[in-house]
Image 1 (cartoon, rainbow, N blue to C red):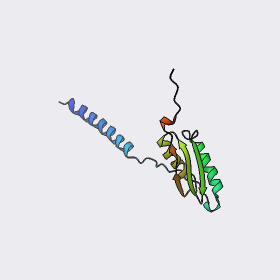
Image 2 (cartoon, rainbow, N blue to C red):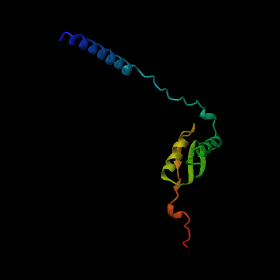
Image 3 (tube, rainbow, N blue to C red):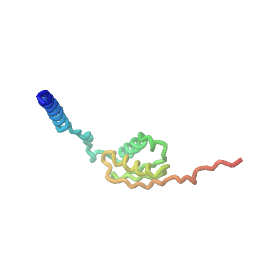
Image 4 (spheres, one colour):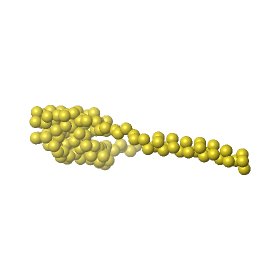
Length: 125
């Protein structure tokens, strides 16, 4: 019993040190991620032609939209998208990407989804 007591004290000491070091490492504050600041743009100086160009560039740089047939028209900061895309998710993506362009007030998405039956069928041989 006399040999067991010092061993138990040493084990408890190591256990308490290990637990206290874990508590401090898990409770320490993590650095906060700061959102990327958007560049400040004076929208009073941006005309519809510039917005049209910016939206077309944004859509062309989006990999799943670069091959889509999308027409862009802008009037007073309101964008109208017409044309067709292959998937319903691409239609929503076009809206999201357009809204990311600075000075866009609203997006009217009139894109249509290409149907699978519209694809040309191969002749049977």
